[in-house]
Image (cartoon, rainbow, N blue to C red; front, side, top):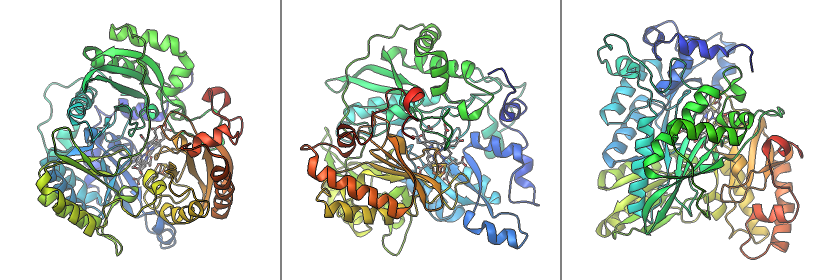
Amino acid sequence: MGGELHPNEDIKARSQHLRGTLRESLVDPLTGALSPDDTQLSKFHGFYEQDDRDLRVERQQKFLEPYYSFMLRARLPGGVCTPEQWLAIDATGRELANGTIRLTTRQTFQFHGILKKNLKPLIQRINQAMIDSISGCGDVNRNVLCDPNPERSALHAEVYGWAKRIGAHLLPKTRAYHEIWLDDEPVAGGETEPLYGETYLPRKFKTAIAVPPRNDVDVYTNDLGFVAIAEDDHLLGFNVLAGGGMGTTHDDNSTYPRLADELGFVQLDDTIAVAEAVLTTQRDFGNRESRRHARLKYTIDRMGLDAFVVEVEKRAGVRFEAARPVQFTTQGDQFGWVRNADGSWHLTLYIENGRVEDTDERRLMSGLRAIAAQHKGEFRITANQNLIVANVPEEEKSAIEDLARAHGLLADGHSPTRLASIACVALPTCSQAMAESERYFPALLDKIDRLAADHGVDDRAIVMRMTGCPNGCARPFAAEVGLVGKGPGRYNLHLGGDGRGQRIARLYRKNLNETGILETLDKLFADYAEQAEADEGFGDFLIRAGVVAPVKNPVEDYHDSA
Ligand code: SRM
Ligand code: SF4
């Protein structure tokens, strides 16, 4: 470091706490876009400027500006919302966005295809339903994930409380959002950002809480992680993790996916102080010159873990105790009905790649609307892009199940691998996509399912994740099989995650087309069928068989085999 600050630092510093010229951009009738600086600031308000990439060339040929629209991501700690809120989300998606809702890998929802003129009405609509989009994106702490742990709801409630508390504590204090979108009076006499300062964080910052034995939030892929330590369903404290992240750049060996390190155990009372200390250490020590190297994972590797821990302890006024032993068994969701300790029920629905829409095959959006109209409990979005209908009384069970079945929302009939797998959004909305993901993965999985059946391994759940680029939005580097977009129809194949989110998947083959992917998996499935031990996961088998070597330290040996 010691070079020039990244231009975004200046945009943040000049923005008057994220106000910029967003108001002016919004009413500029000459373009469907925002000014370039405002496109950076808009992220802190939860939305991204995008253009329809399917239409790009055609519009270019007609000398038209790209077909601009916006993606908005809500803040929904722990993914929890009420049926009334769901109905508002549904109506907003149909009336002011592209008629779909997208459940994300961070337990919230996105709208796509919002026209500039509809942005403010849309933000007002969700706020009327008591949902906001503050810090949906941007260089701040994002939506805090929390295990939706259906079986143990007393503990879930306690952990969810912490997700909300941590999220609220790490929110920026600026009133810019309320002034611009909700027409609040401007703050008299200026305001300060006590936690973030004028330039916020060097980069995005992500926090999650997991409740063993389920790692369904992929806690090790977060900048800051908390692993709940409980006794008799009562929360004692957390093992604190720091420095996880997935984003990489193809062929740039200075970037790598990394799982978080364990810092140690803290008592509940110290949770907020430790969260703040990790965030402010990253604020002060993170790289503000190269956004590619700005995440906390690089800060920790540059400082050294020991020095990082000393700094966090000093800032928090806390000494970490030795981390408590924990064991995770899965990264996936538990589909179908699960009985809760209080006698009520949870139903986990399968939403393929999180896209809620009505198609000729399935009427997911109508189905969820019908369930929301009837249901009195909660909805919980999972970090695997699925939806839980939570706290259903015994007498409502069959009506909810009938609705779910009629609309194709049940997991029944899907292969265990499909149910364990996810894909990112990619084309046509994502500006970063190099290859298809959400639109292509289901068809590829049909073929992979057939291969698995041919080899008799179709009863196994293999965690497969596809992304359209190496940013890693579906966490492919923590999957047993990761497919990462390289170019149109081309993917890098990563192998060797452990199905529990505790091992990085290594790059195995570059630039494969569909035939290459299927041929490679065909051979590996044959070996798996022949040589695997009983109940041995696919990723564990690949490591034991020496197909890929485990990554010991991503800085030193992640790129070895690439
Ligand atoms: Fe992501 C950027 C979608 C979870 C790593 N991500 C994007 C953008 C906004 C593209 C852009 O910069 O223009 C994508 C919008 C696509 C669209 O049209 O909707 C996008 N990310 C998503 C979602 C919707 C994927 C999904 O299919 O669910 C997820 C929304 C989560 C949320 O609700 O907040 C999503 N993104 C993730 C995750 C997974 C996670 O956080 O658990 C990761 C990997 C973990 C991590 O952060 O390291 C992730 N997204 C990225 C990165 C790479 C960051 C890095 O450190 O290099 C980018 C690009 C960037 O930040 O510059 C990115
Ligand atoms: Fe877009 Fe890449 Fe994220 Fe997929 S992984 S949504 S292509 S940024």
